[in-house]
Amino acid sequence: MTKQEVITRDNVTVGVDAIVYFRVIDTPKAVLETTNYVYATSQFAQAALRDVTGQVDLDDLLGKRDEISTQIKEIVDRQTDQWGIDVENVKIQNIELPQDMKRAMAKQAEAERERRAVIITAEGEKAAAQAVADAAGMLSKIPGGINIRTLQTLEKISVEPSQKTLFVLPADLIENVKSVLGGHK
Image 1 (cartoon, rainbow, N blue to C red):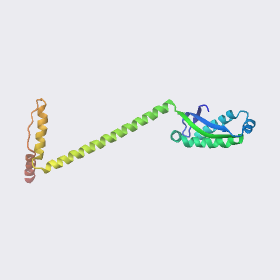
Image 2: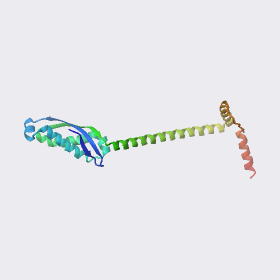
Image 3: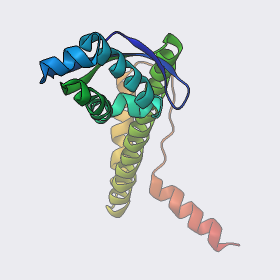
Image 4: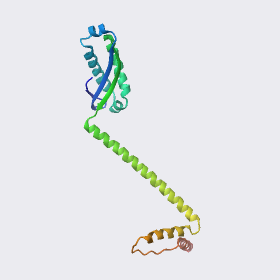
């Protein structure tokens, strides 16, 4: 069967290639009932292809090739039985999309990949924030824990040459000042 231009139910024009596998069961019937049984079978299959694909959306055409092939086979087989022909199989081989549709599908796929990447990044940040919160909770329960962490941070900063001056106050001092100021109100 040659490539057919078909319009899907959602009005997308595509080129579809399909193959019809058939065999002659009754030779006299095949020769007498049609002028050229090969051509007649091919033409009927092309018409059935256009009819069936015109009733499905593009997504179904792309995703349900086997079901559509089976529908076409049944339609063609019913007609060609009268001619002594048995249609054994119909296979949709290729579906050629218009260039603008290919670009649109590529953009959609790219947007979906970006959406997934954003979700994965956000989940990672959420897990990291939870780990930091858990660590801060643990450090605040240990006497001097915050001070040790502050000294570790200062040690990392001091390795890099810079012109920064830091004034470090113990975290406990800040908490004590807050409680004293809160008590005088």
